[in-house]
Length: 552
Image (cartoon, rainbow, N blue to C red):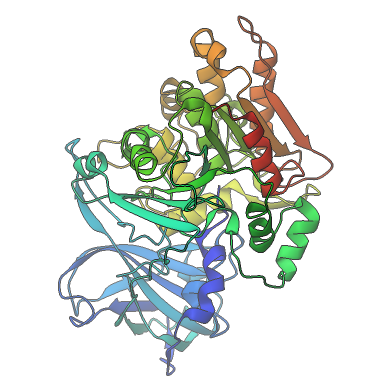
């Protein structure tokens, strides 16, 4: 679960060069074009106009996702040629304002962006267009090769009937890869399996944190912790030998969650008594998201097989890792929490245990706050009065105050991309868990415009093993004996995304298990512990606990 690409990218604003154009006057639509010097051939993709009351950061970086501080509007383009015009008008999808026709008149700073799609001739016979990740983690507002305009000061008047022209004349540059250090190594390999499926080169990666003394003991082999999470090229747990003063946000997070800074983790990792192991993060972005959920799916392809049969063997043959199940441990939080448990449950003979933190929905009776099996609509609370409809929320504060509704989140993603191409959370749920449509794009679990849940798509997700509680119920006789002592789950009782509810569902089932009876280890942060609660432990403490369970 990631809050939004916009929130995460706003911090990059200081790195961006800002070109400020002159006022374009009044307008009620935007006309976007790009010169041949920016891109020589036609482009299929999606055009955006971002609007802000300020020039810094650039509007494309200021948009804040579900909370919507900066309105944006978007429309698909098909084979748009240099010099041709694409209109963004009242028919364009928008968020948080649904249409340009409803945007209040006034002065704004406007910036256009063109998210460039790639044609994928897949091995399943479908041909789709989607954004090919350029190792930026599906962040369209910084994606290399995307086109952006200068920032223009404009006056918006929905009644004027005039057009405002914006030229997409700047190409976003490639992002420099991080350098290897004595402690941290980076891997990027082309996946034959995924390349064959997508009909284009697809890459997998890993970031490896080495233990103290690794180079000084060339004959020694080490246990490994595979740390699951979103795309990122930084060192595991923010490991850094450079001390810095914590930001106010880091101070708040430390006070609330007890997590240490990257430098504090470095001090623990390099201390004489710290367990010697490797920590490895994976990079596996898809054309739909920054992360594949580490499973095979009809929409994403065989990412699970590629990670297990290509990436992990590559890591384990290029670094001195004990290649034994009892020395391969799993951990991760949120999306990575779900992945760590799924990998443990689906491959109990390959991994030795999982420490799973605040995982994405483990039980589809509690898909955050939605019961996918019994509810008819994701937007409204069950039993909602037609005259007083009660909106359903998917995000809250630790004290229970609601923040974001499912309807707002769905509107946001529908505006970011059609056919499941928002690059965000709901669309990757649909692409990973749901079936494939006749057009080759994912079938959503619910309609992003109406909230109506698709029972057939939900049944497909259950029957294909993505509801992990249902999967364990169905396969306990085979899996149970292999999982005893290996499942440890942590979540705050006020998880920001209601993910504690799915954990309760899994725990309730495990209490009923027999032959063998194994209840797992469940820990619930109280009171008012939100998303990100690590069981009250630092990252270093988590690794010490994992190391104690390793059996070389």
